[in-house]
Image (tube, rainbow, N blue to C red; front, side, top):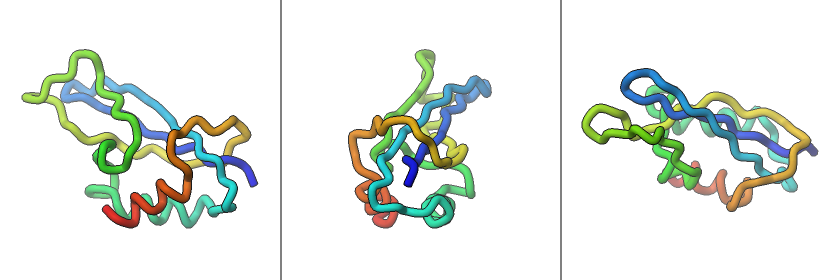
Length: 101
């Protein structure tokens, strides 16, 4: 089964954006539909999450200001890919983290 790419972004108070993705090795053949349903069930107002709680890298812009910029990140999508995994945690660990938040 192909690996899974988790795409997300950070949007600051002025609407500047920074995009990133994490690629998980899908050695347990987790379906994209099941993973997306779990992610959607854990998002704040259907869009946002705190990267530190989900154990994914924070991608704040260099001009980050706690007074005016949000501290959450925005979920974009998940997709299958053939790129090599680059995550420091496994997909099973990520699913476990999502289930616990």
